[in-house]
Image 1 (tube, rainbow, N blue to C red):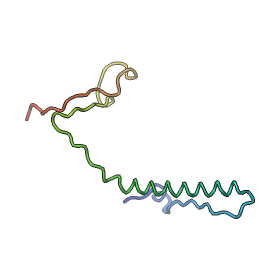
Image 2 (tube, helix red, strand yellow; image 1 turned 90 degrees about the vertical axis):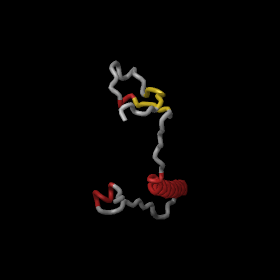
Image 3 (tube, rainbow, N blue to C red; image 1 turned 180 degrees about the vertical axis):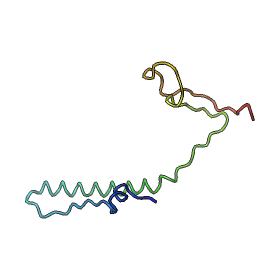
Image 4 (cartoon, rainbow, N blue to C red; image 1 turned 90 degrees about the horizontal axis):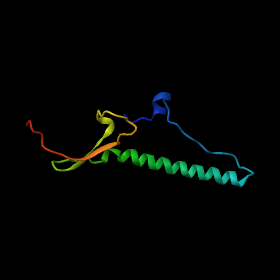
Length: 98
């Protein structure tokens, strides 16, 4: 169920339409055309990212690899502002209790 938040809340797809009447100001017309072109390119890129986000490989780790640990996931005493954001690198080892 891949739906946008706008579709879920309002039941319709959000559409931005930049159609306009002929303008006596050519600079405004050029700017609107550029905005429309950039918007279409952004929509294409977003669709591409959404279609390929599930294609990523999971990270395979094995014994002997070096890893860094996120500091926010550890219970470290002391001033959090002055503590490092990451700790390591630590080698992956085999558990002793197998």
